[in-house]
Amino acid sequence: MDNNITIEPSTHGKGRKRIANKQEWKREKAKSKRYSRQHLPEFPTCGHRTKTMQCCLLTMTEIRKFNEGFYQKKSKLLQDMFVLKHCVTSKPKRPGTKIKENVRNKPKAISVKYNIKTSKGTIPVCKKTFVAILGIGKNRLQRIVSRYHQTGGLPAENRGGDQISHKTDAKRQAIKRD
Image 1 (cartoon, rainbow, N blue to C red):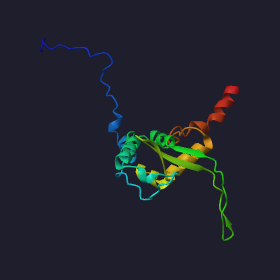
Image 2 (image 1 turned 60 degrees about the vertical axis):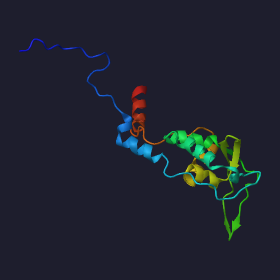
Image 3 (image 1 turned 180 degrees about the vertical axis):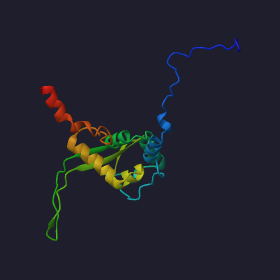
Image 4 (image 1 turned 135 degrees about the vertical axis):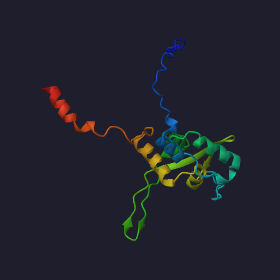
């Protein structure tokens, strides 16, 4: 036997257990890819140059910086908060209902103003431009804004979590009472 083999103790807190690296998990990679930029931002084609919407005043560098600010974080919650930070919701002054061939549409529930922050200040833009610059769907934008207008709270993640324990809560409470 060799007597010159020495056994050294491991450093405190660094045992044999491997440290989890979440960035390497398949699910986390898919999530990161899902909320990363799919294509470059588009220049607005709407041609608005009025007091309420000034889409034509934007330059491509300002559009690119705004888009990069949105995709800087690849988390859905942080991106939703970024969208809310640049939208102003209010109750419409004229909700109106349109009657079209004896079919009555729902009255307008929300009035939304979209702003883009630049070096010059905030520039109001239309929904089409806002969606084209961020590269998200209009339905996602509408869902974020309407949920915020209804609840008044920040967006929360509802996916995943405990699905079973609430089924046995009644039994648990009955046992505790007895």
